[in-house]
Image (cartoon, rainbow, N blue to C red; front, side, top):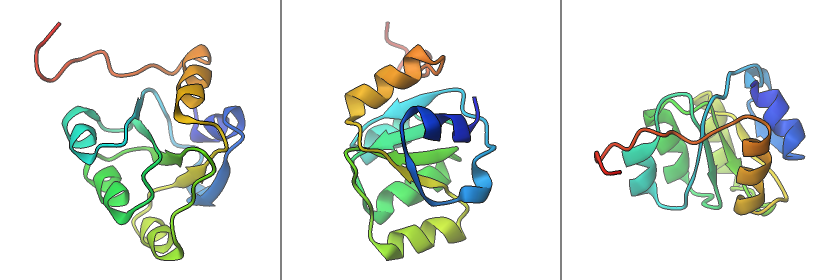
Length: 121
């Protein structure tokens, strides 16, 4: 699925990265802990979070995420948006809460990463 389709499914507003909406999204990861993002997110995953700080953008860069969705209508400040645009990380915001976002994406074919990096069942 393309990021543009995710935007439509989640009624999301693009904050930056309009030119990146053709990126492929195959999995997503919803979380508000940077440490878990770094541990579990695989490249090209979509990050879904209510965190709106610069650390999320840096994490998305490090993990080569396809983009970041902010839930609950949250928007980061202009400095975070500019930094994200300079680093080619698309940012979107949706009025939906995190649980609804995951449900909407799952019913439309996006899944979480089934591989557990800790080797636990």
